[in-house]
Image (tube, rainbow, N blue to C red):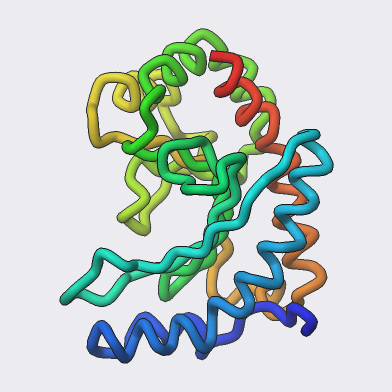
Length: 206
């Protein structure tokens, strides 16, 4: 099966009422595409990083009432789970696709990672293009461009606030034609991850 990109009906999934109904649509429409693109990107990251990487597709298993507002795949170096590790993500809200290097609140070493990042803010700024964005909460749609972000303040919050997170990458709006071109979208994801790998490696150096 060839990855053909994401179409309007994929994003419309998040307007379906009811947990079971929305989950069924996520499983039917989106997760097969995640499997294809995820396998490609997992192999690519493993080759670049020189160690085995593992694909995880969000199951939303803890949900019992509220349907998910977004869904994603994650790639990390741990087979059992990704939330406690730095990981790469691709996912959808109803109005955009996100491509992240994610450090979320479950990460045990986030304080040390934050300290390392704070010592290397110049390197981070020099590495990341101005059109990349940062989120401090993976549950929210919003993100701030790296150009406008006070990086030091964001990283201090990531260090000091237990629930604070740090996700860096790209948002692709629903109306961007690249989303419907599978080959070009995979290439964009590879380029984004390539750009973010030095930050990923910096995290592990801490």
